[in-house]
Each structure stands twice: as structure tokens, then as C-alpha cells.
Length: 617
Image (cartoon, rainbow, N blue to C red; front, side, top):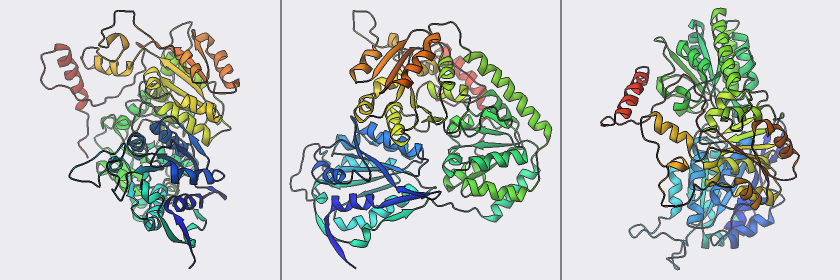
């Protein structure tokens, strides 16, 4: 076997460049892009190799390590986990900035490759600039912080370790069950160390994402449980998207006449006018889906990790005969709450379950009930999203405007704050894959960075970011990144004067409004309340921008944004007193002992919802 002498950095990048992915007969590079801010720890060795491989995956320069990694997360999501983005940083704070992004990828089961500079393996120059010293453990660096938020973690202390580490990292990121971020620590000196690598290590390799098959016995048991059901329901989650199981799901539901409700991650699997779509479920969902869940005796949860916003902290299932069946490629997610499990690929599991059920269908009166509930919910949505002659619109009204101004292929991106619930409740799906709502890690600052990453992944379509003023102030520098690199976005800034959704939670639980809205913040100023001029700020970052002062003007402003040659920011003031709600409970920590009568009242009301909470069975 022939060998070739290369440095660690050379071998690393050459190996990554040789990896390919095949899907439906199309083969393309597995790693489609890299994001880098260079410093000591990744510039002298790794940076040169990224430059020399620009033809395989271009390297884009961001302004913040966290936002670069978030852009890479959105890139993977836009590619339905089939292509991966790389983010690299220098040592110390550059690396630790990316820990939050790793948390987003880990929580949402998304691939992300982090290449983090590290201190010298020789320790001869110690302590180096940006090195945090641990007196009793000299091997500990800030890169160890990634262990809590990565699926695969390694530090390369000698070049030969790449032979084992890199294939394992890729296998993890492409595993449908264990998918998540991988972090490779690269000590500064080891990056430049040379070794005789086997030439075969760099041979092109075509990867395919596996479809683990379910056990026949589990399929048969699930079919038997469904056949006994009088009021079955399907919960469709993000795993349906990643499996490419949308068509199989719809055909399964239609053949067997089972209503389908969706999680946030599965929100656009069914068009809203589909006769079997019951709406979004849970705390950020709909009365219709939650009422259907209240009555359902068998729930088939497909590709969802059943987080608390989906289950209403496990209060939405109220039928005493309730039975949970899960289809999930991940054992951990499938086995929650003593579910009857089908562990396997969502698409193939649905196809096999369909064969077992043969011509079985639910009773028509159950479908009629579900359709009546959905029609009532549609009336509520239409009423609160209706455009009115107002200069201070609600979130719902702005969401509705964006909803019907998007074209097929466009994607709306949002994350933490009030917008995830407002979009989940009020979005009327007309096109699949039209939303990217990061509500697993609920990461403020994801939105604009993700818009940039989404545009890199899908350059032919509009990348539309909806972001609150709080998240905008937390992380906005990728407006400049998008202008710098030529990846145009539309950014809709919904300005409610602070962290209004948390103020709502604060006051709804009997607490005093404090430190969320600007007017409630602690201050020593003796001048009027300052408000950010988001239009001027965005223009200062190189974008086009305007303020929409009246809801009636939004459509024309959005048309100007679509026609613009670069990122365009629309600023809209939002009424922070108007919120969309649904019939669902959510558990938050409330004081068991207090003298505050408003908190006592809120706690007592909260306890009324707790009586419906399932205890793990």
C-alpha cells in the first residue's frame, strides 16, 4: 500500500474533500461549505488547506464564530441532513463561541463539523494567549466544553489518529439515529506535524444515509393496536422530513383515514387545506389538534422526540385508554413514556405498517369530528390574521402577510421569542419545506445567521428571516456577511420593544413586569427611553432597509425587498399586547411558598392543568 507524506491539516482537508454523498442518483460533495474566522490556532496550517480546496467547498468568512456555526446548522437543515457545513475557529474564545451552536445542532439532531484550534500538545510554550489554565489538569482546554453538546468529540494529538477519528465523525453525522455535531480539536503544533498517510485514505468515497428497517413483530403489534383504535391520530415530526417520508405519510393517512397533527419541525408536511390535517399540536399549536389529542385513544408518533411544547408537558393526551405508538429511527426517542415502539426509518416503517393494515380505516364519525375542530380553528386564525387598518399590527397579521407573499421554494426562518408560536399557530401551509423554526434549543440569535446559511444551501429561492428586536440585537452581524458574500436575504424585524414574550410569561404567572421590556429595565438615565433605529443599523451593515409604518404598506415594501439586489431589512413595530393563544397547558416552575397574592392565584390556576399530566405511562 502506497503512502504519501502530509501534515495533519493537509490530510484532514484532503480527506474531507474526498467525501461525497449520493441521493436519488445525484452525487455531490458531502461537505458543501465551510465558515471560518482565522486566528492563531487555525490560520497557518488549516487556513491554507481550506484555501487550496475552494473548488470543492468554498470557505465563507463570518463575523462571529457562533453565528458561523449556526449558519452551518441551517445549511444542513436546508439540505435535510444530507450535506454538512464546517465551522472552524482559533483557540480559546473563538472555540467557546461555538458551543451554543453545537447545542442547537445536538438538540435538533443535525450534522455539524466543528474544527477548533487548541493549545500546543507539546506544552512547551505554555501558557499561550487565550489558554485557560487548569492547575490540576493541564490537558483540559475550552474545547472540553463541547463534550456536553456533541455526538462525537476528539482531540488529535498525533497525525495518525485521523485515520480513526475522521471516519467515525462522518459516520456519526450521517447516522439517522445518532446524527448530531462532531468536534475535532486541533492543537496548533499537531496541525503542522507530518506523517506517512496511506494513499487509500484519500480515495473518493460515496456515502448514502442508511434506512434502518423495523422488526416485523413490532410492525405487526402496531398494526394490531391501530386496528383496535376508535379514535387514532398521527403526530408528524421532523423525522418524517429527514426520512423523505412526506408522500408515504400522506398516502398512509389517506388510505386509512387517520387525522394528522404536526409538531413545529413537521409543520409544513401537510398543506393546511388537506382534509386530514388537524393542525399543529401542543403549547404552540392549535385548539383543533389539542382537542383531537384529548380524545385520541391511539397516537402514532412518527419522527418526533415529543418535547414539552408538543405534548403540552404531557397534558394533551386525556383519553383514559390512551396508547402511544412511536415510529422513530432513534431508540431513545422511540422509547419515551413507555411507548410501544417501532424502531426504524419513518418512510419504510409506514410502508410496512400500511401493508399490515391492509384496507382497514377509522370510523367516519371520528374524521367528521376532527374536520369540524379544524374548521373552527381556521375561523380563529382567519379572524386574528385578517388585515385591518392599523399602524401597529399584531404578530399574527404580519405572519399572515409574509405567508401569502412567499412563493414555492421560499423558506421563512425564525427561532426564539414570540415568533415560533405565532408562526406555528397562524401559518397556513401552501408549500412543503416553507419553514425553518428552530424551537428545539430555542436559540436567540439563530435567525439571521440561519438565513445566511439557508441561502447558501438554496441560492435559487428567497431566504426570509423573521426576527424579533431582542434576537436581532443579540446577533445581527451576518447581515453584513450576506452582503459581503452575495447571499441576499429578506429580514423582517418585528420590534416590540424588548423581550415581550418573556414579559408575557412573567405577568401571566403573577410576577411583576421587570427587566424584559425596555420601559421595565433598570436604568440610571435621565433622558427619554432610547429605541434602536434598526433601519439605520441595517444600512450601516450594507443592506437595503426601510421601516413599514402601516400594515397596508407591507405588501409593496415586501415586493421591493424581493426585487432588491442585496439583503433587504423591513422593520415593523408590533403590538406587544396581542398574542395568539390555544387551549394547551405548559409546565413552568412556580413558587410553592409566597406571600404574593397574584402569584398564589396564578399557581392555583396552573395546578388545575397539572391534573391532566401523565406520569410516564
